[in-house]
Amino acid sequence: MQDKVKILMLGERSVGKSSLLNRYIDDKFYDTIQATLGVEYKQKVITNGESQLTVQVWDTAGQERFRYIAPIYYRNAQGVPMVYSVVDRDSFNQVQTWMDYLKDQVDNQLISIILVANKCDLENRHVSTSEGQELAQLYSVRYFECSAKTGAQVKEMYSELIQQILSKRIQNNEESQRLRNFPQDQVDNTQPQKCC
Image (cartoon, rainbow, N blue to C red):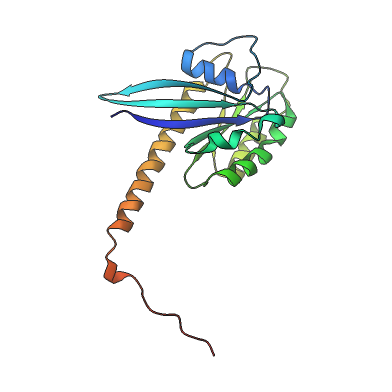
């Protein structure tokens, strides 16, 4: 049986989510690309020895008018690259809004998040590396500076995210197994005592 992971791209419009996806799945970059309307989906099969892993990547539209449909796709998501553009200060400022929105939709204990600063190949930066690192520390997530255009750090970012997803899956399975094996006679069945 082939295992799979579900990744959901989040961030403001025009930060390069679709370009990161195209670079990762197809190893291609397009200078002009249509804005995502709603949600787009691509997948890639990774082989490691005899095991295969299907990586499903869902690319969401960053425009506010499409945010109402995004929660449908949050279901069962295991990883999120939270993307902003280093040449768009507003996209960086909106990361908190996206993180809050994500927190309302999913259990943060079950999902892996990576903060992604895209378009790092461009010289007219409006967000510094240190600002991105500080924001990543604030949310206790890994930080990557990527360029969909050059391919810099794109594969590494997705690989790290997939590793985090698989590690969380193992931890959650071990915790579930431990709880199932917890002896029933160890459960505290005492009744609360009245205070007065």
